[in-house]
Length: 120
Image (cartoon, rainbow, N blue to C red):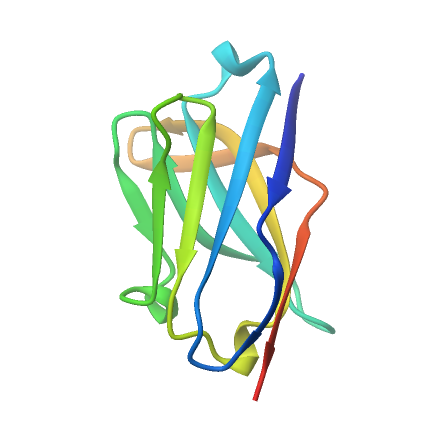
C-alpha cells in the first residue's frame, strides 16, 4: 500500500499563492505517477493535475497557467504551485498516486486531503 501525506494548505486572499506538498511512503515502487484532485463544497471531486515519473504532465484546462505540478528530487514527493488563486479554487485538495501508461493516468491511492480557502 501507498500512504500519502499532504501539507501546505491554508487561507489566502484572492490573487495570492500557495504551494502544496505531498510525500508518498510504503510501496512506492508500485507507482509511477502522482497528482492532485480537489473537491469543492457541494461538488464532485475533479482532477487538477498529474505528473509521471518521466515528467509527463496533464492539467485541467481551467487551471493551466495558474497551477504547476512538479516532482521533488526524491521520486516520492510531488508539489502543486498555485498562483493567482480565486475564491472558486476553495476546496479540499487531495494528493493521489498511481500509474501512467499509454498516455493515461490512473490513480488508486489517496491522501487525507488539505483544505485550501481563498477569500475574496
